Image (tube, rainbow, N blue to C red; front, top):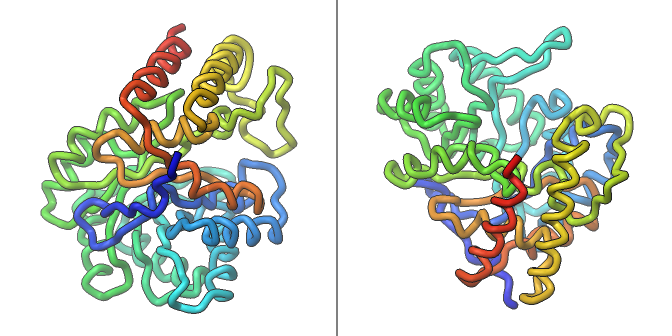
Length: 319
């Protein structure tokens, strides 16, 4: 079955055209995912780009700049004509061990300038508020608009927003091109709740954690363990009855995939891409092998396959 990795999509109402799958840089920051070798990180991103992916998603909080610095090293090695689109974020940092959110005008500007330096670019393609912040949304939106007009960014996004929060941003009158929310067969709600609003307002949706932190990779077993520093070791999602139900669902997905020539990862990602309003899906990479297969995750699905995937996922989500 032919893949659809080169069928680029518009990101909302922006001028950006993106491949259906992008490379996520969260794990290469070396924060919350255990130790990460920089050589593996560089190889992962290079392999993802070689496979046909044309965008990378990072954030300052991913290792407090490490992920963006590594991304910058990859960009520096490429001729300008081969450089991918760069998406990053602002407004979330770790201060004295605590997560601090800020959408103040000063923070927006500081994070933009810092990311431009780390990435080694003159313009960020997509700049996203990482989490809703305590400051008035009008202040944040206006600051982003100033960056747009100054040519330091090309598009504006938000992440982890509800429909009410998106409506509040839209009421400011300032541009908003996309929202990045969690979306997976395991936990579809964060995106399904906002997709009708996105379609109505021509705002693209970027889905993160489509493989639910690796659970839908199709490689886990019941005795799966995690290294020190990997946050998944403390999550109930990856233990006990929840894990058992989803391992059973993965076996059902594997059987379905054999019938139509796709693996579990392709089924999990492609199903999301067939949801109207989804512009792209972010899949994290940590090594060259993961990067090499990234663009092949997007595949066409017949309506019968979509119904079968949904039935398997619905059964697994029931308590």
